Length: 333
Image 1 (cartoon, rainbow, N blue to C red):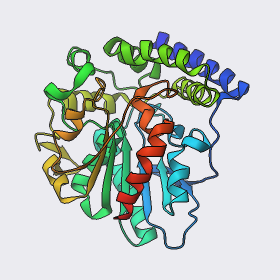
Image 2 (image 1 turned 30 degrees about the vertical axis):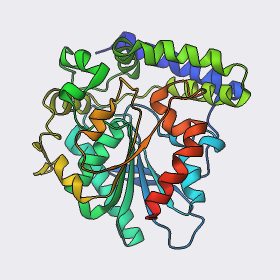
Image 3 (image 1 turned 135 degrees about the vertical axis):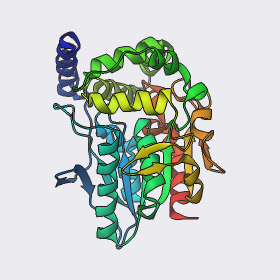
């Protein structure tokens, strides 16, 4: 259905491969893969005995390794060193276009249930961007599987709080029932927020060029951004219709798996939110507007992250100032 964008995906992946061959790819920690008919996880060996489990949910439009990009700015490594048992959810590249919102929530629930059985207790869920949205929906209908919820630049309330993507989403046509090329989503992001995805990216490259560490992170993020992912058309259509246009989760009227996912039920869980108060991609009101008394960790835009939307995951300042405090919160201090 999108031959031009599919060709663009292949071209961009080839550029990403060239960057990786030049040494700009990820340097990931060792992991084992857990295969299940309904989900796939990366499992990292914990350093502590009887560790608390953490399930990381990336956005379902890019590769999961943004959470483990480089050793010095790796959320995965930081959590392992803090003594957690870390699991990283891997979204499938849905060539058949069969996955929708309900099946995605079902897969996350099954993964959380498997981890709860393995560790005899619920997980801490950490979700970034749309992955955080889906993690929050899962937590609202399966609270017994979630001990705490960490949202990183994750929108919950749409409508007037949608931000820069609002006008584009509201005017978008129906998505066909097939996988959606990643390049198409990239173009949509650029049109919606060029200051973030074009101007900000090139500005960051200029300010990083005299800082070798910042430049290494910048180039690794660029390599990751070229690693195209083709999510399911039905999932993207459900996100557009049920979340962006109808704002059903925030309105406590999202029907999934025979239940009603209600954002107001999140008030029963301890929740932390990393928010960028300057962001137009995920306005802080979109994250905080649906929550009651969350623990808030503000993110300040910084140099060397290429895209500020992933800055909380790969930023040096974020790893110095936010994640140690957030890990203390996760431990219950």
